[in-house]
Length: 284
Image (cartoon, rainbow, N blue to C red; front, side, top):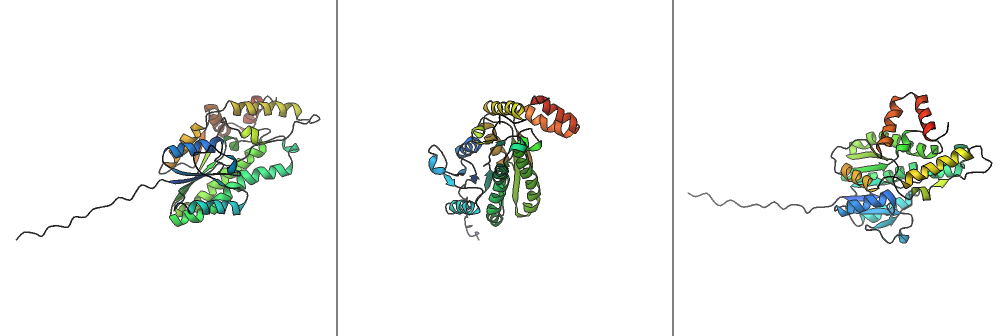
C-alpha cells in the first residue's frame, strides 16, 4: 500500500526590517556624517536638532529635540515610535565645546556645558531605556572625546564633562546589560567640523594674567579642528561598531598621536606627562 502523499510546508521569511537609528545633533558635523553614511546602507535614520526647520539639506528626517528638556526628548521618541515599532540604536552625539581659563569662565557657562555634554545624553538614555527593555535589545553609543581622558589647559571644563560621561556609562552598562542593552563610548580626536564656531569661548581679556597663554592656546585649538580628520572616519567606525555582535566598551578615533597620548597618560608619571602637555601647548 502506498504511503499517502506528504503535505508540503513552506517557510515564509520575515521581510527585512532595517535597524532604526536615532542620532542626537544630526544636523551637522559628525552627526550628519554618521546619519548620511548609515542611510546609504539601508538603516532607518532619525536625526535631531534644536531647530530642524532651518535645515534644508538633510537626507534623513530631523526631529526637534532639546536634550536638556525631558519633555522634548520624550516627544521626539514618541514621534519615532509612531512611525516604527522599535529603536535599535541611539547615538548620543549632541554636544557643545567650551574653552577658557577656568578662573575666568562664568559659572553659568560651565553649567550649560555639563547640561548638554553630560546631563543631555543621560536624559536621552533614561527616555529610551523603557523601549529597549521592552524590545529586549538595543545599542546606545555615546560620542565622548579623547580630551575626556586628560585635563587639557584652557579646555578643562570640556574635558571634565566628557570624562564624566565616560565613567557614568561604564557604570550604566553594568546596570542595563541584564536587559540586553549594549552601551559603547566612542572618543574622537579633532575632526573638521563647525564645533569651534559654535562653542563658548571665554573672552581673551586685555587685563587677564592668562591673556598670552590662553590666546595662543585658543589659536592652536582652532587650527587643530580646521586641520582635523574627515568626519566620514567616525561614520565608518560607528557603522562597524553597530554591526559588531560584542563591541568593546571604549573606542578611540583620531590621529595616531592623539590616540597615543592616552597610552602615555597611563604609563608616564603624572608630572612627566604634565610637562609634555605644557611643552606641547607652549606653556613653559
